[in-house]
Image 1: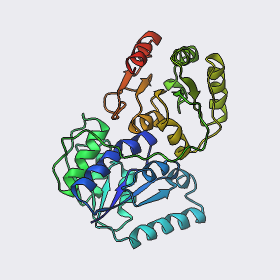
Image 2: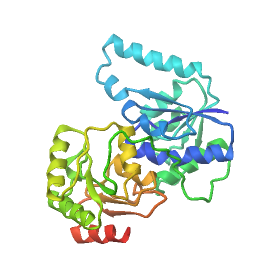
Image 3: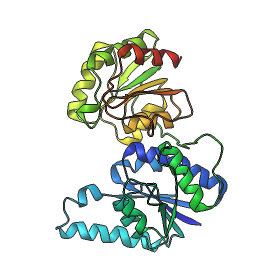
Image 4: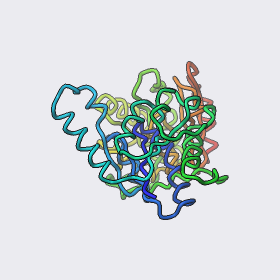
Length: 314
């Protein structure tokens, strides 16, 4: 079978879909798996040895330039390339109208959630096959169940296997280090700077150099302030694959509810996720090592509570 996975964004959501690929390949050896994803997150499925090809798309950019000829040319090129593959099945793990529409571009049977199982019920009308998956389950579990239903195998009783292989590092890291991820896409997700410094100092006391990650100029400024307050280190700008290498070598990770925190847990790192503007229940930190999620919408975690979780990772 030749199967296309559609899970386009965001980074954390793409990470959560990875165990479904491992389940599929275990139950159906020899299946060819490709993946359609937004270009900024393409490095994530590329780290999975079971994914043959990753199709990067730029819908976030294209939708702002729909009246430009170059946009339609790029979209047609992607559509034609997908159709040329002649997939046997397309599984839309995203469950949105936009993802369902893109899934249909492959001109193959498209399978997804039924109308009662997704945030945008209209998407279910675009599928040739649907399956019911309880909405109250964790995102990882939902993806695994949907894949099992449409690929025709029993849902495994085993723990999720993200199957990631981190690349060789491009940045020379300290011998022993712990990672702090204090930046997020929205200000509502942020945690006080002084508390990050305190966590960094605890890692330093344990003999682990605090390494503070960043992704933009403003985030770099914050990372440098935090590192200065706890004798930490700040790497240069790193692409997603290089960031994965840094995360894979960390002894401990503490981060906000961001894609890189979820990636760290998926790479098997002991991880604490801090939630300040979102309930972690259905999208909490998930991984094979000890992990914990703390906080919630309007519930900014106290330093003492986060510190207790960090200490439990030892």
